[in-house]
Amino acid sequence: MMGYIWGGMVIAAFFFGIANGQLQSVAEAALSGAESAVTMAFSLLGMMCFWSGMLEIAKRSGLTDWLARLIRPLTKILFPKLSPDSPALRAMVMNMTANFLGLSNAATPLGLAAMHELDKINPNKDTASDEMCMFVVINTASISLLPTTVITMRAAAGSIDPFSIILPVWICSICSVTVGVIVAKYLSRRNKRRRF
Image (cartoon, rainbow, N blue to C red; front, side):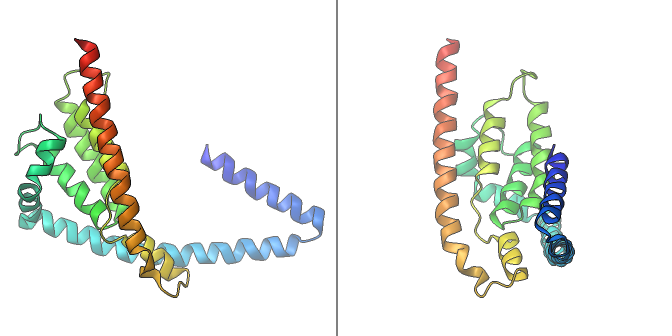
């Protein structure tokens, strides 16, 4: 669907360029935009490789297990049905760590692995469990301590102070996670009451 939208926008730009006699400006903008996209992609690639490697080191060194134990009081409240040594919980901690560092792209495969593990223990396969719903909320509205992807994009785009977004990101992400968790818990309890 997105391919059709982008294709339609490109075709519309060329038609409007022809209609206004600005086809050369449209072509120049397309070329400079493509150049900027390649530059930004390489900037992001270096950052993604570095942090993905750091996450793999954290996993192999046992740091993620230590993090899992550290945030166990929180995960016990959010995911009361999961055991401390659950593979799903380990994958979720890795995902939360990646999101905490602002690595949304690196967090995606970890999130998919966590969902796969949660689906294995879900008794009702045609309906998402409470744990799955809660994880989606936390993953989507994740708290980002260091929004590295956004900072890198701002630096690549020539921002004077790419780090100035850190405090607003903290405020917004904490608010969004808090509201999301409260709503998810409320809906989970309401659903349980309806069943009985």
